[in-house]
Image 1 (cartoon, rainbow, N blue to C red):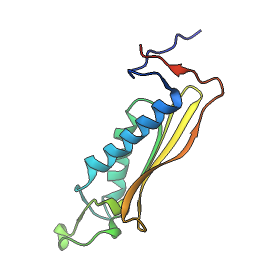
Image 2: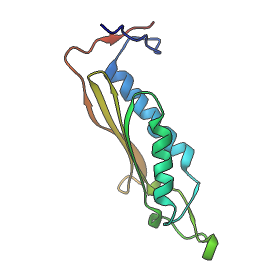
Image 3: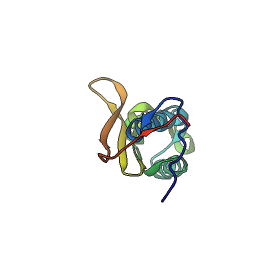
Image 4: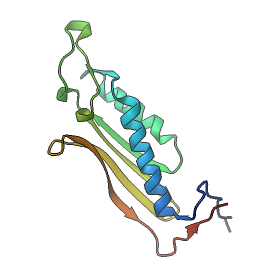
Length: 136
């Protein structure tokens, strides 16, 4: 039988609560680390894959999907200088995290009606047997 892991948290959290916290950190990291990076139509997909690969290295992450829509920004220059900077309007990121039988899906996307990049929980499912994670 597998030994329970010691939690990194100082208070008792369920796996669901811990994953929801982690999802917010990961989406916040994507938003704050990549705004302002140069992007063009030619490089947007490669940049998105690089962000996905970096986030996928982190604990509990089972899936990452990032989309960058460079057409949502204004042109900065012409020719080889005709790129844009990643803006909040361009980003759409979804992360899935799992710990045992607990799974959380969260998303960062721009809401034009709010004029704001909103992070939200799309799914949070726990087994009825989910136990509280101890303080270690």
